[in-house]
Structure formats: C-alpha cells, structure tokens
Length: 342
Image 1 (tube, one colour):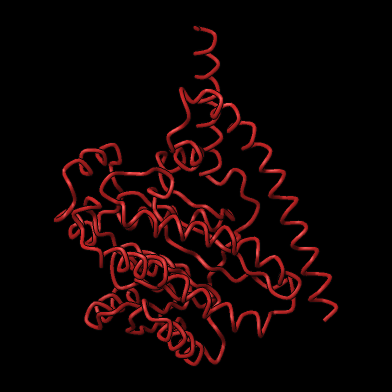
Image 2: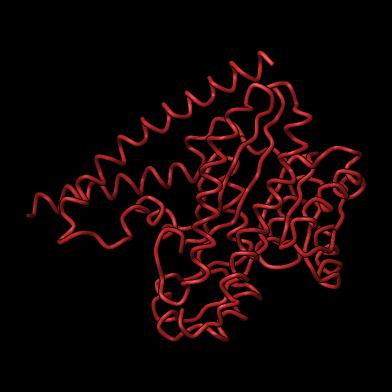
C-alpha cells in the first residue's frame, strides 16, 4: 500500500512538473497563433471573456472586430479595446450588432466583416457568445431548452459554417501561409456533469463534439487551406454573466462549485491565448481544468466498483492516441488525392 502511494505521489509530482514546464513555454518551439497584423472577429466581445480576449488581441497587434446584440455595450467595449492597441495609428477596430442565434445574421456578419477587412474574410474567428440559465431540469420552462441550444451551440455553429464557406472557396493555396483558426468556447461542465446545468451542459458538450469532428473533417482540405479548430473550456469566470446566473442558481450548484475558485476574465483570456500560441486544440485554464480534461472520460458513473472500466479506460486512452492519428492520416491522404487532382 505504501509503495503504491509513493508511486502515485511520484507520478503526480512528475505530471505537475511537466505541466508547469509546459505552461512556462518549455515545449513551445514557435508561436502557432500569431495575430500581429491579422484580423480577428470575436463574438460576445462586448463584455466578459470575449471583451478581455479582444483587448489582449489588440495589445498583440491584431485588427479586431467584435459582435454582440447591444449597441451601447459594443460602443463602450470598443473604446476600451482601442485604448490598449499597440499601434493605434495602423490597427483597425469595428463592431457589428447582431442576433447570433439567426443563421441569416451569421451570413450578414461575414459579408460585412469581409467588406470592412478590405474584401478579405477575417483570418480568425473566436466564438465567445453564450450564456447559462441554471436551474433544476423540472423547474425550468421547456422554452429554456431551445434557448440554451440556440445561444450556446447554434450561434457558434452558424458562424463557423459562414466562415468556412469563403475560406474554402478562396483557399490560401499554400501551407507556408499562416493557418486560419476557429475557436469555440465550451465549459468545464463538458468534462464533468454538475447539477443545476442540465440545459446548459448539453449545449457545451455539443460544441466540443462539433469542434472535434471539424478538426478531422478540415484535414480533407489541408492541401488547399490550413484551418485549425480549437475549443476553450473555462470554469467559473467573474463576469457580468456570472452575476445574472447566480440569481437563479440552485443552492446545491453553488455548494458544488465552491471547489472552483474562479478566475477573472483577463486570467482566462491570457490562458486561452497562451494555449493557442502553444498549438493546443483543447484549452483549459488552471489546474482544475487540466485535471478534468485529462480525466474527461472518467466523470460518468461506471459499472459496479468501476475497476474494470477504469483499467480499460487507461488502455483505451493510450490506444486512441494511435487510432486518432491513423484516422487523421487517412483523412488527410483522402483529401490530398481528391482535391489536388480536381
């Protein structure tokens, strides 16, 4: 027993050491998310995490366009974003008011953003728009199911679809050019179910699934255009949205969330950009997020005592690394053979 505990402790120390080394940039060879001089569109950019990301991008030299519903909030956010630009005389900033739950609006946004960006579709799409309506499943009105899916899933799926169309119709044609990026914002609840989020969690799990699938599907077009998918999984964020959530959040949910100390919007934004620069596809901030991501297949209830499921899970987790690489290689080859020939 003592030997097993010692081994487990040693593995934990090794894991944390590697994690800290990685977070400090020890494994980073080059910045895989350069934004200086590039154009980035951030949905949900008028407040919270979206605004913090927009400000950080402005500090890094990006041209930034933010999207949200309320014009007043957009105008206020735009002043703050412009104020931190590293090159205010050459960087460009713009906002668009839109209802992201409408598929027609995603097309309008893309068209307007392209016209503003010198008739070039922006290089990077970051989808931060979304909200949570906490509550127990049977206590919430049935209309909330539709609202949560529209706000958190459809809004991002519509935008991704609208951007991929022009990107793939007018590909860069060269692997030497910088990759284009689509970044979704999911949540830690996509890794760990939590009472009170029965309508919110499915929408965030769906985003993770869409991102995973597109990550492979876009390899078909890799010979013509390099497009990368990413998903950010934040935990509790101290934001205006959190204040609204807490008004209806069940007491049991607040109790269970006490272990997640929470982070500021700026902290989450910094971790997210760091993860993107390191080339990560699934990005978390903080030790809790890293741990939940590592054990994302282990949060569901298991059969019996769970011993067999756990051991098989360890083995499958290793095997799936090889399987995924093999599947990606097949998809990439398929796209190369067909797209290049055509």
